[in-house]
Image 1 (cartoon, helix red, strand yellow):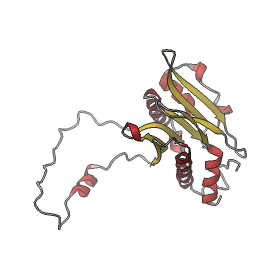
Image 2 (cartoon, helix red, strand yellow):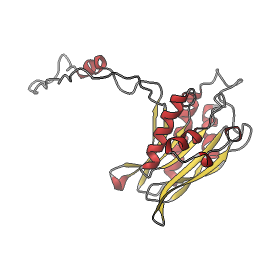
Image 3 (cartoon, helix red, strand yellow):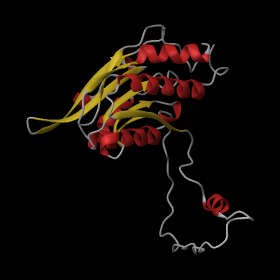
Image 4 (cartoon, one colour):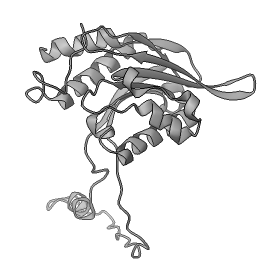
Length: 239
């Protein structure tokens, strides 16, 4: 199925991009479950918005024992920390990801598919926060695929990632040539050198999507079928 524009009319705003991204992430996870070696499994991890954890009032409300709770338990006194030295503004990026985990290694994350959201690209600090998160994956040897079909924000997050990794202009790409786009990264040791293999695939509204490499930390590189999973998500969304 050709790539649709989920961020412009006629789909937007009648059809929610959040709902579609959620469905696509599940399609990717389902497809990976049929492709991954038996020791691995895929899970969808999604968090939209700026709230990273419950605030103190919400935590206390959730932690309160029920009125008819069981008796005989030892009450634990809540420890009150000292006043903070500083309170700083923060930005927590959207997470729309499919994580692959290794059952033989305490279910550690070995590869991640990141579906880019408009909020990941809407301002410089958002782009840097997303790039920092992706850099942290690569620096831990975790394979990464980044899929950006956002058409209403003309920025290439690959270049923000290169800036965070401090690799220099020669590894950046012209944003105009790769929007939307998909990238895949494989961090590895090769001949006593730490390197990152990268595969860069331009996407275009009205064109089919590619199959891209998807590297598992300490394991194989498997195919990630963007076209098949996208088609499945569109059909289930009735698009």
